[in-house]
Each structure stands twice: as C-alpha cells, then as structure tokens.
Length: 294
Image 1 (cartoon, rainbow, N blue to C red):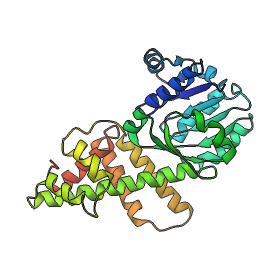
Image 2 (cartoon, rainbow, N blue to C red; image 1 turned 135 degrees about the horizontal axis):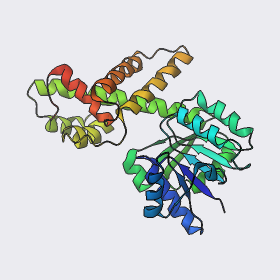
Image 3 (cartoon, rainbow, N blue to C red; image 1 turned 45 degrees about the vertical axis):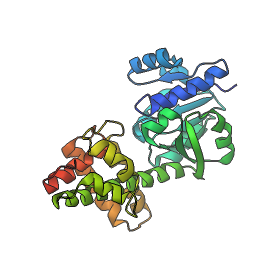
Image 4 (cartoon, rainbow, N blue to C red; image 1 turned 90 degrees about the horizontal axis):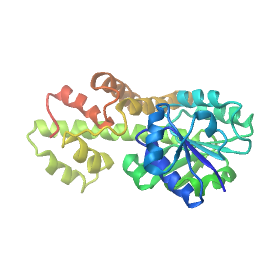
C-alpha cells in the first residue's frame, strides 16, 4: 500500500489531489495535502476526504506529488523537507518547471534516497477536474511504472525522455499555445476591422486548416464572451514561453517566432496583469488594433 501526499492546491492542484484522495480511500488510507495557505488544505480535506497536514509530515509519504508555480518554489519546499523525507519514496513534480532545475533536484533528492520525476501536465482545469490530464514525464522507466497506478489524475501518461525532458516538452507545448493564441487574436482583430462577423469567421476557420484549440475552444468560450475566467495565469504562460526561449539559447538554436511571442506575452502580463487568464493576452492585441474581439 503506497501512502501519498500532494503539495500545492491551486486551480490545477486541488482537483488533481482530489482524484488522488479518492484513489487512496479505496485502499483505506488518506492522501496528505499541504498548501502554503493552510486554510486551503483544511478546506480540501473537508470537501474531498484528504488529510491536511504540516509540510514536514508529508515527507513520510511513499509518493509525494507537487504542483507549484515555478521550480523556485519547489526548491524552497525541498529545502524545508530536507531530513524529513522517507528513503525509498518517489517525488513527482507536476510543476511547469525549468529543464535545468530537474537534474539538480533529482540529485538533491537522491542524496536522501528519494527518486525524482519531472511530470508536468496539460489539459487545463477541465481535464484536472475530470482526471484526464496528459502527463509528460522525464525519468527512468522503472520509477515511472512504480507510480503510474497512483497518479489518478492522469488520462494519458507518456515518458518523453530522461530527467528534464518532461519540463522541456511542457515549455515548448505552452510556447506553441502562446503562438497559436496570439496569431489567432491578430487574425480575428483584422477580420473585425473589416466588418466580418467573428463567430461566423471562427466557424469557417474551425472547419479549415487554420483551426487550433485556441480557435475551437479558448477564443469562443473565453474571449468572444468577454468572460476570461481565471484558470491559467497570463504571467505563468509568459514564464513558460520564457523557459522555451531559454532552451533555444542553451542549444544556440534559432526560433525567432518563440522569441517574439515571449516578448509579447511579457508585455501583456505587465499591461493586462499577470494574474489574469492567459487568454486575456488578446486584450493587448485589441488595444494595438483599437477593436474588441466580440
């Protein structure tokens, strides 16, 4: 019987931990949960049957899953848990972390007899709630197979390479999200200025070669409705695009589109606000064109 703990109960982490708690209850144990704002952990326990515990107590779990804003917060938690971790356990980091951080974190944990897998997720809050997230994992096959049955939030789990590969794929995936969203926003802004009905234009685009998840789901459901629900923060998408750009520089590659889009999202995060939903980046496109996507 593997005991589990979940660290970080944000928009993604809370439903992910809820699925793990439900799986644990089937075995007669509780998933331990912790959040920096401890009231969130207590509320999670009351709603989902997990058990809110101080951070140091989570270190005795056989499986620790973290879902924090950046690798810096993971490093901070690792420092606080040093000397409190259980040898033979596995740490699965679902943070959208930096590929350069993963080998360092793995080495740091190996010194305490703990395995480390970088395992960021994709699919957004909707997939987190339904337990159908895509998990991209970097690390050894044997360690991945040990934890696979316990990651109840995963609909698809794919090993993408060695340590750091999960973070790398996540960064490039989100850079592509940023590119697609911005390009679609520019195209629709120009169509709007030409007097085209944007809903009709999206119907055509989504039946044609220009379609993407941004045109099929994000823009119709969040932008045209003017709802911009705060799920994945604009500042976090700018961060992820920046990680992808760091990867370009580290291999001395050429990716001018990623570089330009990273700069645009950093500007959008400052002007629109880093806590706004990532789709609110198109408010900057609107300002640049003197129009509203509606």
